[in-house]
Amino acid sequence: MYTTNCGWWTVTKVSEIRGSIAIELGDRTYIKALDNGLFTIGTPHAEGEGPDPEEVLMAVPVGDQRVAFKSGYGKYLGVDAKDRMVGRADAIGPMEQWEPVFQDGKMALQGGNSRFVSADSEDSVVVRSKTASEPEMLSIRSHAERVAPGGSAPKEDEGNLNQVEINYVKQFQKFQDKRMRLHEGGAEELRAAREQGRLHESLLDRRSKMKADRYCK
Image (tube, rainbow, N blue to C red):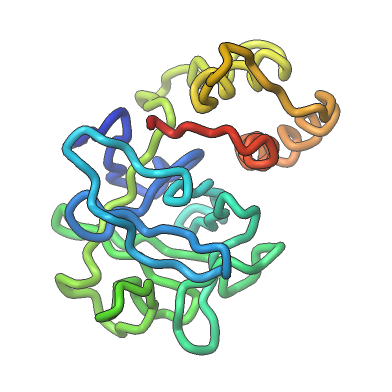
C-alpha cells in the first residue's frame, strides 16, 4: 500500500527506486547529507511536509536488484572504513551499491559491506548491523511520477529535452522573483545523458548548480 507525504510516496519494490528519493529512518525523519560528506538524521517533519533539499537523493539503478544514490552535493553514497554512510565518491564502485531488502511489508537497506543501514546514539547514519531488525527498518520515499505496469512514461519526461528540463524545473524550483532559471548548459549534455540512461541524474546535477531547488517546501 502506498502512503504519501506531500507527494512523496513509499516504494514497495526495487524498480520503483528511481529519480528523486528520500530515505525515511524513523517517523517523518529523513537521512540528511552534511557538507563534510557524512550523514545524519534530520529533524522530524510535520504531517504532510516533504523532505528538505539536503534530504533528497537521486536514485540510479545498478542492475535489477541494486541502486546507487547521489546526494545534492554531487557525490555518490557509500560506506567508509568505519562503517559510516558517506557521500564522497565521484563514481559508482562496489561500496556505492545498495541493495534494498523487502520482507513482510517492511524494508531494510544493505550496503556494499553486506551490513544494514541504521542510526547510532548520536544520530549519525551507520552501516554496521549484520542483521536487519527494528532499528534497521526504513522506508524510501519517491517523488517520481508513478507509472502503472505497461503504462507510459511520466508526463515530466514528455517532449524534447529542453521541455523536459523545463518540466522538472517547474516541479522543483522556487520562483522567488517569478522568474524561471535554467542551467546555461545546452541540450547536448542532456542528450548524451539520456543515451547513457542517466537523464534524471544529469537534471539533478544541473539543478543543484542553480542552488534554487524547493523540493516541496
